[in-house]
Length: 328
Image (tube, rainbow, N blue to C red; front, side):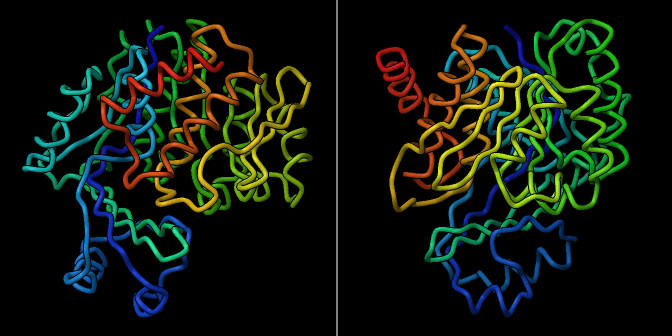
């Protein structure tokens, strides 16, 4: 099965920070903030003497890369800049076997400065850069039409151009019976685009991912189970991740609770949701039930938070795919 994704290719700067850094920079811990070049420079200046790592990331790209490492055929569309980071990103996709349908624009490649505090919570500061220029004219219609599944996240709604691109693929998906999976991505994105997201869930999506905060914003309800039940009435498969309490899955109206896997004290929670989505979709396309797919998703999310960074190495991914076959 081929999975086509539109996302934000970003270069991740993972920096170790403390609470006073967040206060100094007026950042709210645990959220994703869209920033301009001036704010990016301010944060990097503040973090200049802190330990940091640089890697390729972005929510949808993380999911596409992990799925490919597990053996699925994946395609990534998005925008990169005509700079060293854009070249670095495209080379990473080639190395991992993801079909590269990114477009190179005369702009800076997007970056995400991820501040990791001692409690292992991450605060993401995203400069979209070239991603802002990806529009409906950049969509490869043949890839979208021939895919078995289209995957996108709520982050795409932050620019008119990307929104148009996603809506174009949603129309193609509907006309060609392509399944659609949607990750709400961020509670503030849900707050900004609640009406649009409800419309997407009800009228275009087969599979929807949310965490408890995102689901709360969508349904104005603090109960993750009830949110899952509400979302399950709008789409075939609804998933609400509920932190240390595991996750709920509604499949055709039946709700199951999936246990939490992995370390009690995570090393880095960056990419946990992206990896969960990859694990769940991997399970479904390989014929596992929604419940078992949820367990695979929880298992992989538990593994990714036990390391630094949002993507596994190819060697680690091979080990995990063997464990999945043996365990599930």
